[in-house]
Amino acid sequence: MAFDPIQAFAASRHEFGEHGGVNMSIEASTTFTVMEAGMMPEIFKGRLGPGEQAKTSQGCYLYSRHFNPTVYVLGRAIAAIESAQAGYCTASGMSAISAAILQLCRPGDEVIASNTIYGGTFALLKEFLPIKTGITTRFVDMADMDAVRKAITPNTRVIYTETVSNPTLVISDIPRLAKLAHDHDARLVVDNTFSPLIFTPILHGADVVVHSLTKFINGASDIVAGAICSSQQFLSELMDLHTGALMLLGPTMDPQTAFQVSLRLPHLGLRVAEHSRRAMHFATRLRELGLDVNYPGLPDHPQHTLLRTLSNEGFGAGGLLTLDVGTREAANEFMTLLQNKYQFGYMAVSLGYFDTLMSASASSTSSELSDADLRAAGIAPGLVRISIGYTGALEHRWHQFESALRDIGMV
Image (cartoon, rainbow, N blue to C red):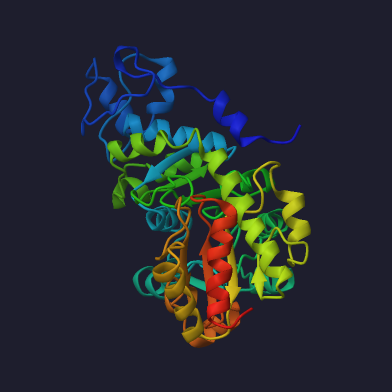
């Protein structure tokens, strides 16, 4: 039977609140008591923790930088959606990525990463980590398996990719990348921010999945948060009191944030499906106009067959598309018209919001890349990344969009 992330979420344990509340309680405490003094050393030694609650009623929490009950429950829910043994949430997507890489690598180790990834991740791997930690990265085209294979060395510890690349929307062949990684004793880390529910990378061999919960999973552009999903063993390593990247670097999620995000998970499937439905409608209309649109749901997308092979049924091809309008000046004019004349969306970074967000990637979310790196990644100056929202009547939204295209002479 095919994996259904919504059913997996529904079947996961529901955490009731204090006094029988239907929603879980917010555990605001920073520190936790135990009923017997002998329990505390066991927690410090890693022998007891929140996963041990079924075996004891004497308390398994220590300090909220270690594990917090509310954050733990959210992590468990996201792990269910990702078909992972375990999950835990962090203060941001970048903190999830950083913690995962730092836990897996030591000074002198190497990462092989996609040459088309979020600009912040690119800067972390290319500039920050080599200077601060001695961890270096080779950037390659993840769609070129020969290039990935040739980049592997005895020092390779991680292959890092995005399920759907930012902003070029290249879909990674997770099963083949996982085999390459495992054949060389490396781990595959996948950022699934663009495609929650649509893809389940762990089912196809990924070792670690990271998210910026800020985007589709939260869905309201009001919270910054991240998540790591993995094996129970890796999560334990991340929370080790002596060597754990999450424990010692402290990118702690606030329990109030965890509670807010948890209330948005039940309707994530509805939101993702509608984002995808509208993005497919726009992409199809743009292709009919003969414009340079890129969307994985279109049959002519280079990885369309891969999408159909790896994706979960019922959630579409995602809420993002790109349109190349030729020049940076045209991109800026186009976005300005959409926002200020037609009230269609907002010029803003981020994605997964209920209204449309748009940006010229080369001068915004990918601006950390040099001109040469932008060319290698296929990010053109006139490329507009559009995260399609679901407010307003669809035909009215399309009319606004087409009107702006006419204003700049594209149709």
